[in-house]
View (spheres, rainbow, N blue to C red):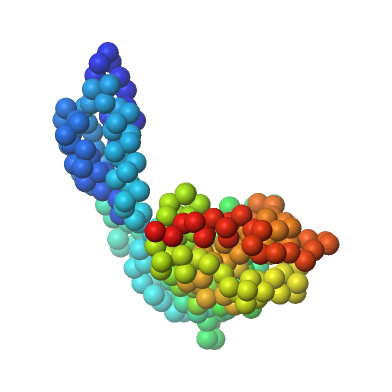
Length: 300
């Protein structure tokens, strides 16, 4: 944010983990009257006439940097049997929690989702999960059943915090889910592939490796179409699509290209995150898909 007073501008910056705003300002220090700060926050001075050039140079700097992948720092991988009043007592020894003393984050991996129940007038979900012979319940807040892309029987990893719940004088641990994903999900490969797709959509040119990663052959295209012939519709993100369509996660970007091409050709229809097989699909020529033609012109 930059505020101006006459010819002078004063800027204040905030960033996220993985992107140093201080390094970004250092790259354009020649056009600043002064600057200072640290990785996540900084301030600077600039002449008002130089603000457009600053915007241009910082945009170039950011475009040349790979943005960090969102992540959750997990402290302990535990068994469900560890979730107990004894754990609550142990956690109480480390309170109070805050910015400099974050509440521990736990994970249970390879748990089978046994039941999904709506609570709070359908605004939240109570999940029942099982690992080995141990079963536990967990709350997933601010997520409706329609938004939840997992089903009973799925094997998932859950990251969560354990809270103290007291009701009628009885104290019990309450599991509050922070994130959930399929146990076979390869986050890095999926997100890396999606970012190449986003690079294509931004109008940037792709190198040969990126071009190959995104370009679907007829067999891949046909496999996605057969998925819709069987399912009729799909709703969810690329993690769920790759899992359900048995598509390798490193081909998530290729799947996005294929879905977009199928929409352009009238084979499927998109509404938000929901894709539906068209009622009367026609025989099509893949070369008529705009995104596939765009791929042909994006190679360096």
